[in-house]
Length: 72
Figure 1 (cartoon, one colour):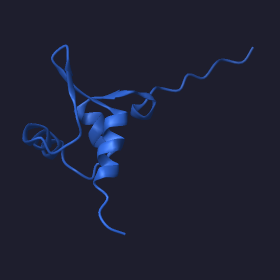
Figure 2 (figure 1 turned 45 degrees about the vertical axis):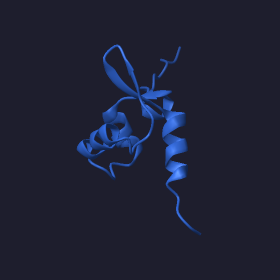
Figure 3 (figure 1 turned 60 degrees about the vertical axis):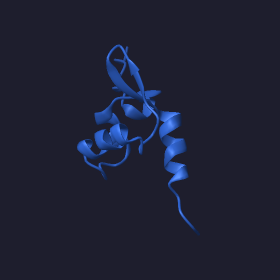
């Protein structure tokens, strides 16, 4: 019997991302501090506080990213 290989879940498998995972999801193009500043200034993607943790829904992040596209 062959052993089952378990692949670790990563941020692409998640519905909710914490700030560090959002940083990775954005290909590390923006510093974690910048993401935090966006949150406090209301410039970044929508977020929720759940159990004291800041979490971003991937759908909201994708929607926010699409809204950032300028001109063609």
